[in-house]
Image 1 (tube, rainbow, N blue to C red):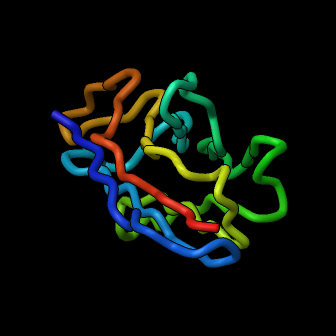
Image 2: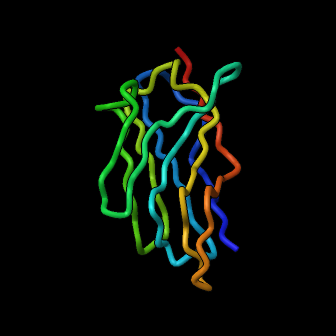
Image 3: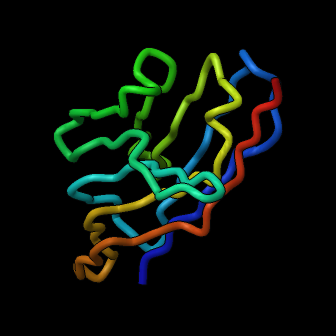
Length: 122
């Protein structure tokens, strides 16, 4: 069984930076796409950024130029580097794998992490 474990959230002042990590355990880190979503209180969960197996990336308009998603295959980890943070970035951030291959060769679809809170003060 595979599992996604997020870390790196916290409280930061506007203009600051945070780096979120999403470690895939139980996986040989073969995936179709992995991404970061966020959900603010009273709002729907939205895609922030994703990275596909070919390395191509996609970003929400609201974070373009400020956030960067990248992977470290040696560590089975996807990161979200967040710079120039704004109060409107405050949300719970969730890591997602569209499809992730386990060590036994089984593919697991739509895997979610437990979430990590990011709070940006003005």
